[in-house]
Length: 87
Image (tube, rainbow, N blue to C red):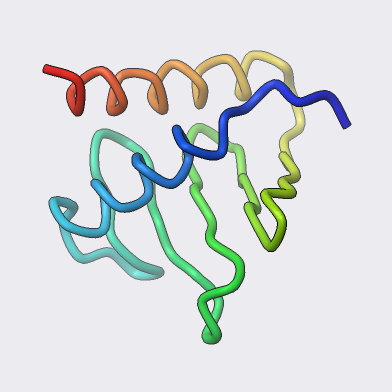
């Protein structure tokens, strides 16, 4: 697996959505991304634009999507939220 994603980025965006997002069916939603975790909290999920990002123990992650364009849009949203944190 290519290390194309910073664990720090994922965790910061997840926490931001949990704190500032609106309640949604599976968790909290903000700027087109939904954040939720499994019951034990060891695996967190970010979902949006047809992409599911599973981020787990030892900073392992997996993307599930059909088209590369979906992943590109998801990454834009992820970086957009991260940029809000840095302002």
